[in-house]
Each structure stands twice: as structure tokens, then as C-alpha cells.
Image 1 (cartoon, helix red, strand yellow):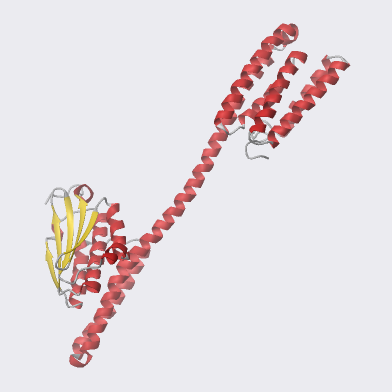
Image 2 (cartoon, rainbow, N blue to C red):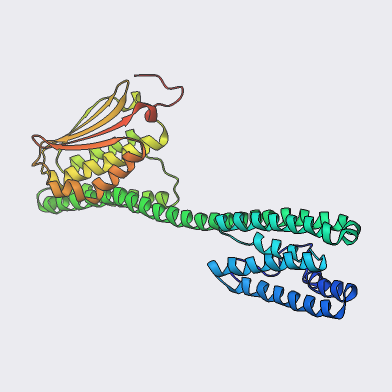
Length: 377
């Protein structure tokens, strides 16, 4: 078997036994109808034809078309000398298995043209023979016209199906890769905040052990509660069942800022801002990441979270009065990178600037955040 063609056509109605009968028929036709000299010449031509047919399947590139041209010439010779046109069906089946579009149409057109011309000439040379076989000749011509195109279409469809399967496998790989990235981002956003909070409360508890033991115990209890919440969130994240609400995230943000001894101020009413679950989940994750960065890197004493909704966009602004950010951190930080990827998915934008601290502004178009049936603010 070759990659371009198949010697035995793959068809439920054309078994290998019928194919063998087609191969024997030319010999029977010549032995029965002609003199010994013609019989010998006919057998040589038939063997030569099948030899060319065999070489056609074993050759590649331009040699394929050379051997195919020899087959066409032998078809014409057999028609003009013996009135036998049925070898053209073998050639037609071979042409139908050519995969190159240009090569197929050239050989397809030439084969039809040569076959029709040789049949017309055969009616002048073997008039009585051809008249008696007219129904079979018509069937042969129909086969020469339809078989190549049918096989070519089928092979093209099989090739497209194979490419589709390959594309499906590739898409599956990309989906798995994207899902892994999503899980990595979600774990970073979820566990990062909680672990930061646990670290801050642990430091605070250590400082309060001698000064205020009761407050230290309270902080340790908060650490235990935060660890339990983190475990619960991880389980829900793995099950992909959890949608983070903005109000819930604002409450947690306030907790972590207070634990870090950073004053928290909220501007805007989260209940008045309606948005789809996906957008709210993304905004909540971004808010969590932004506040985590404030706690880790800003050395600020105050953090302001502002929610703004107008006719065009929804904006989330997180500002602090700390030392600002480093350029390399803004470009390469894994948290900010994940935040940008999430917001770009919603056709939004993330801007960060240094002005008496750090200001992070997230904008999402209203066409994304607007939810059917919600009231305009």
C-alpha cells in the first residue's frame, strides 16, 4: 500500500475476487476473438499494461504521471487493435486515487478525452463489434467519467476527516493546557491571599503573645479559620463549582487589610452594580490579587477600593499610599500577568501607574458587564 493510492479499491461492492475477474477478462477476450499472432501481441500488451499499472503504484512524484501516460497509450492501442476498451477502467480507478488536485484534474481530463476519441475511432475500425457492445461501452465511458471523480471526492473527504481528527486532538491539548493555566492562576489567587493572611496574622500573634495573650489567641483562631476557608476554596476550585461574589470578596479584602494594619476605604455600592457571574468572578479574583499585592509590596497605611459604573464601562480602582511599584514587577509579576489575561478575555484593560503610591485601574465594557433585566445605574 502506498500513501497516495490503493491498488485494491476500498469499496464494499468491489471485492478482491471481482477485481481478479476484471484482470482475467482481457486475456479471455483476446484468446477467443483473434489469430495466434494477434493473441501473442495482445498478451504482451496486456502484461505491459499491468506492469505499468504496478509501477504507477510504486512510483512517486513525476514518475507516477509517466507510467500513467503509458497506460493511456496502451489503452488507445488496445482499443484500435483489438477493440478492447475496458482497460480504461483500471486507469480510471488509479486516477481517482491521486491526491494532488492539479495532477488529478489534468490526468482526469486527458483520460476522458483519449478514451472518447479512441472509442469513436473504434466504431470506424470495428463497427459490428462496437455496435454489439454499445451498452457495455456506454457503461465503460460512464465509469471512466464517474469513477475517478467519485474516488477523488471520497479520498478528499477521508483526508479532511483525518485532518479534523488531528485538529480535535490539538484542540484537546490546547484546552488541557489552558485549563492547567487557569487552575494555576486560580490557585495563585486563592491560596496566595489566604497564605499571606496567615503569615501576617502569625507575625501579629507572635508579637502579641507577651503583650496581649488573649488577642494572640484570637489571632491564632483567625489563622485556623483562614486555613479552613483556604482548604474549602481549593476543594471548590478543583470541582469548578465556585463563583466568587464581589460583596464576599470585599469583606475578605477588608479582613486581610485590617490584619496587615492597613486602613480600608470602599467607594461605591457593590449591590448597585449588576454583572454576569463570569465577569463578577473575574473582577473578584482581580480585586483579591490587587489587594494581596498591596499587602505584600506597598508598605502602605491606607488602601482605597473604588467601584464605578457609567454608560460605557465598569471600573475597579485599587489605590494605596505606599512606596509604589517597580517596573519589572509590573511587567513580569505572575499575579498581574494572570490578571491581564483574565481581563483581556472580557475585552477589558488593566492599567497600573505610580502616583503617591500605586493605582491599579481595571476597565470592562458595559456590553460585557450588562446583564439582561438589570437596571441601569
